[in-house]
Length: 207
Image 1: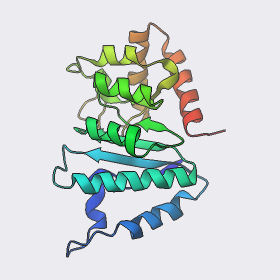
Image 2: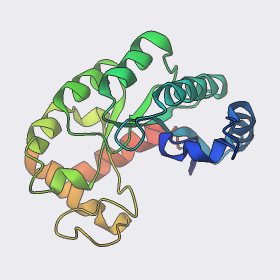
Image 3: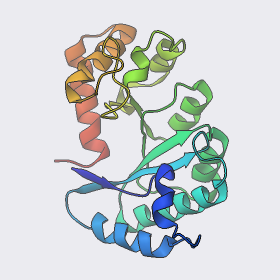
Image 4: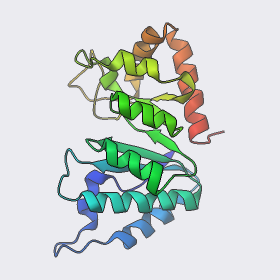
């Protein structure tokens, strides 16, 4: 299973030394890659105003073009957003809707964002931050998300969950995220694992 897309944090790769932006060439390469059977989504794509404050318009343009690509290829999208809630929701609601929806990757624990994501009928993906001791809204946000719209992830090699913060992350640590969700939902860890696995298969149309 693979994903393909231009992350908002990788835009330097499409800008030449003289400042020219090679959008179409890069998108054509991604489109060819995305036609392979193992590619299940376009992503991660989106907006990041935390690391990149100077190229907001370029980020938005490339995000919209990649949604158009996803629609053409009948693929869902994997959305990255950081410090860009208003713009990301505005694009998905009012400017360019994705026909096959998708998932908000490592979704920020922002109540208003979660509300809008669920209205748009996207999945919410939880990662290590829901286990952090300083994640004060984690329980409330987890409680907000219906089981049928929830998946889990590592964001490997980053964001290792407690009690492994600071170490390299990998899929062995998914159990800590599942345990956190199970505690909040009052369920067994095995139930959360089964539900989120089934949701991921549906999201990415894996048989």
